[in-house]
Length: 115
Image (cartoon, rainbow, N blue to C red):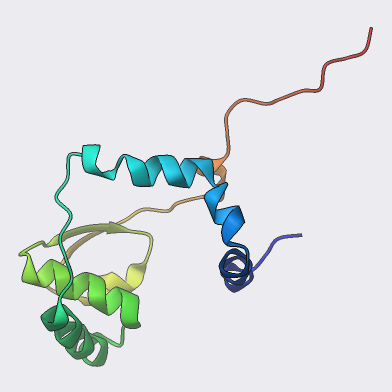
């Protein structure tokens, strides 16, 4: 049975020990500093600008904050699976469809046969 995103979030919030078991997530977090990218901070001014963008473009909080931080850091290129960002005239958006099948392992595991 497939879970809805809010059900997954609620489960993880109520079961922090399960979050600790998320090996792939923990590996990614540990390796963030090794990535060849710059990670920028948000600030109070980012949140104020996000409020303006939420009103201007009709974005929800997270999307508005993304573009506010981008604007403050002179970033204009965005790859997303969210077509809403195309409403922002100063963004160069590239839509990418992320399929759940892309995240599945390509190796199939079989139970050994009993001889």
